[in-house]
Amino acid sequence: MKYLAGGLFIVFFLILMYLLFRIWLEGRRERIAPREIPGEALPAELRENALRPLRRLNAYYEKRNPELADDCIEETILPDEMLILGTNPGEIFHGRKWTKHLLQCDWKYWGQLSLNVERTALSRAGSALYFALPAQVRLDIWRFCIPVRITGILEERDGLWYISKLQFINNLNTAWVIGTWVAALVLAACLLLFGFALLLSI
Image (tube, rainbow, N blue to C red; front, side, top):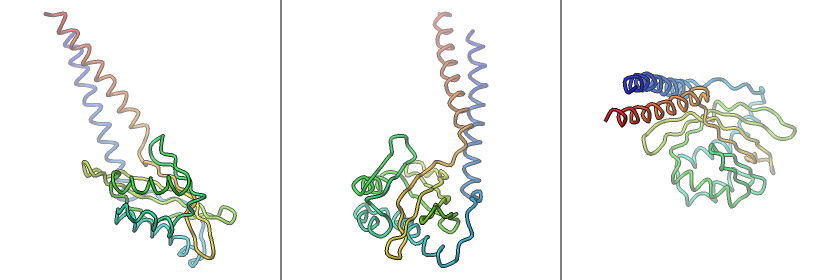
């Protein structure tokens, strides 16, 4: 039994390594050459004005200074209407207080986020604009880069555009992620089986 468990462990360990490599490879491709997101062809002046808050948000994320959270909100966001969905299930933020909390936590703990603003896709949504853009975050711990997709709504106030909705999405192939979970569970089962077989042989 221990030989069977050991053999299964080796097989699923190799499968796990392959799946992790595929996740890394697809993430790298998406960071280097993100897939094109379709949008509308808007007048150049409108597009330039609409991208202003996204450029400013990117600049604040580059500085990563928690003391500048209020300035960032004033320049880029409609705080009373703001709704942010983060990459984790519990990250649902609404209003000025929680928007500031998210920005400060991102700048302290999340990693270096870079928005590819020039590749932003814009589409009209009534008087507002829907946007989608590729980005990437370099995690502080391992310097590991994850591709991110950011979507949201832009609204105009007194001739200036502001962000009123934001959603951050980890741009990873979930099929490969689920595969790694399965492989990891089978590896754990093989280890338990191997340990049980060793105990029986004593």
